[in-house]
Length: 385
Ligand SMILES: Cc1ncc(COP(=O)(O)O)c(C=O)c1O
Image (tube, rainbow, N blue to C red):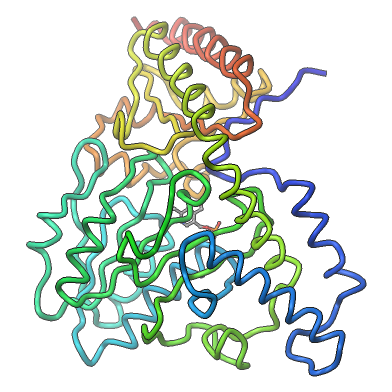
């Protein structure tokens, strides 16, 4: 059987065996409800608190500043809606960007229906928000700024430290969706001046359906899921104990591995970029050429339909994706690619290839070769030249 080449780590990453191993007891033998006062409950509580400590340490936070959620989407919803309603007596204006993940954009759209006002900042051709433009958009009613740390579609790193500094100076809350950034770049909440920061475990070899929101000490938030008093009354519902344990172990390993793995991943990514740009005419790299995630490539090919390209790659055993995982499968145009002003033809012919620590140099060369053959083939069929 043909070996598969997985180049879709931005969509999700395989769970590490050592993460699964640590989770296993909490499905069957240590099954207690962490709210229970008995020994079985206390065992589960202890495991959650260990995971909280590990998560906090990975981003330079205090244990009490971590709230576990069901993933990146819930963390974004809680941060944005929670802050908007907690601070609505102070103002009704929010600022975000045109290239955020749908979990942020749709939360903002929903808030607009509830009477809030939202500014969606434009970005440059690399997908970058300008801190100056942000500063100009601030008004006395602004209560929250939400700008992602790294873009999931095109990999661009936003100037979040600078944006955080501006927000802190002006006394405005700053949320950053760091879902794509954990394990890829150094994240210290103090350096970012972040008040709220979203995390999702499955992007760094943890389980799916679990995440966390960093909430800076003293930051008021309204709850989004109402019910019991779990997570200091902020997030009701019996905790996903195995998932939380998995998140804690995965983020610890991601941080331990980051410095060792990232350079080699970056080198392989650069080989892929070079091979594609040099050997496939009519190709381009989207997103910022330098200020980008070390494992991230996003290409456009003139005269190509990305669906056809992705299907042919899949037949060749290569997993890539079109834009973000959330918009693939729908034929809607990517709001990110529109925001960076990409021409129609280049939007239609765009794919994302993202690497992981398991990706080998041979796989990269094989993927580049297949890409070249398939692009030539597809162009031959349509007579593009
Ligand atoms: C930047 C970003 N934010 C949020 C999410 C949503 O995370 P989750 O899948 O854990 O809900 C994703 C996942 O694709 C993402 O890339």
